[in-house]
Amino acid sequence: MNVSAVREMANDLMDEYAERIDANRLEEWLDLFTEDATYQIIPRENVDRGLPVSIMLCTNKNMLRDRIVSLREANEYNLHYDRHIVGNVRVKEHQGGRWRLEANYAVFQINLEGQARLFAVGRYFDEVRYEGARLLFCKKQAVLDSFSVPTLLATPL
Amino acid sequence: MNVSAVREMANDLMDEYAERIDANRLEEWLDLFTEDATYQIIPRENVDRGLPVSIMLCTNKNMLRDRIVSLREANEYNLHYDRHIVGNVRVKEHQGGRWRLEANYAVFQINLEGQARLFAVGRYFDEVRYEGARLLFCKKQAVLDSFSVPTLLATPL
Amino acid sequence: MNVSAVREMANDLMDEYAERIDANRLEEWLDLFTEDATYQIIPRENVDRGLPVSIMLCTNKNMLRDRIVSLREANEYNLHYDRHIVGNVRVKEHQGGRWRLEANYAVFQINLEGQARLFAVGRYFDEVRYEGARLLFCKKQAVLDSFSVPTLLATPL
Image (cartoon, rainbow over all chains, first blue to last red):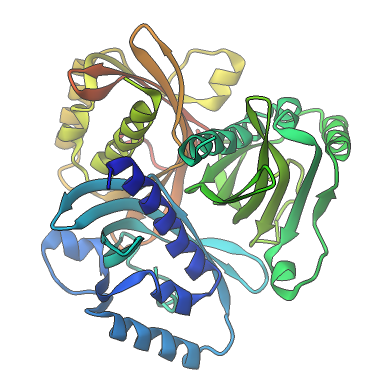
């Protein structure tokens, strides 16, 4: 697999990731992860200090599935929209069948009155690998700069 | 035309689209559309409910030209700057000589005192085709999440 | 060097530029410039009026080094985080071994309480060239739309 092809697929994967959250298609969003995938949201402050404390940590896809199920039960109606803007996607390194990806993100939330505000900014530090012809996340780490999130995290970042 | 080449041109077209609006070069912005192009701004709420009501709808390029002319006459002076940030550009599908493009956007407005604020966020659902060597929009649909726009839409999204 | 390869490297350079500022690795950020590089932050208003007055102007890399040194001495502690979101990177033209790059940017600042706000938006007008196998900035011009920056510019844009 040449690097240019991986770049294009990584770019598409990152957009697909964002789009499935933003369109509230969270069950299909799960399809972008491998079964052994880890998903973590961690404040930048903790990363900088070497503290391992996360805002959210799922160490396999079943834990992530549970999150989505409970999210659906807790919130019968979607009380806001999300919109992600993801910057340039980097393909940083290949090792043992995995590629490291990085990209900056900004997430905006839009309430039911149609008012948008900045919700979160940070950087993704991810790992992806091929399963068959598809590129999937085996690690998603969203480092969150704006750890003082005004509403607590309902939807994934 | 191979897909990688289309991706590169689509990326450039999307940036050129944004840059010509942001630089207030709206007459040249028109050059990015085919004569039969449709241009639509539609609130996300309406898309989700299957309602066809648009904020703006032009069903050919002449209607779009008229918009720009009346914009120029109504606003002799540019009362704000726009700045678009467009995320990863997707090339989603090819059919009958057309490619479907999608990308998330955020638009910031800057007033004459140099203060910037978030103006609009959403996703583009576009179609492009070649006319000669150039890639042009034959459909531009800006789905607008933040439909409660504080100032009404003067410049295109 | 074919254009697709330059595009990929330009994309990576632009992200690396942003990441080294955002991670407060400013000494390594300097490594992205040639010795004769110019660095300029200029308000959009002045560009539009043909006024040459800059907010910051360094006409070689030593001046840029001095800025970083004095920044380190003036601010012993980092009082905020930056986060850049850079849009589609354009490779506009090649002449005399240099490529012109352009891209829109938004910079968010996050204070020590973890609250993020929009800080700056604008467009980069850059020139890059190869030194050995690396692509470096020989000109970085950040046109700043939001020239009324609430806190004065400590870190580079």
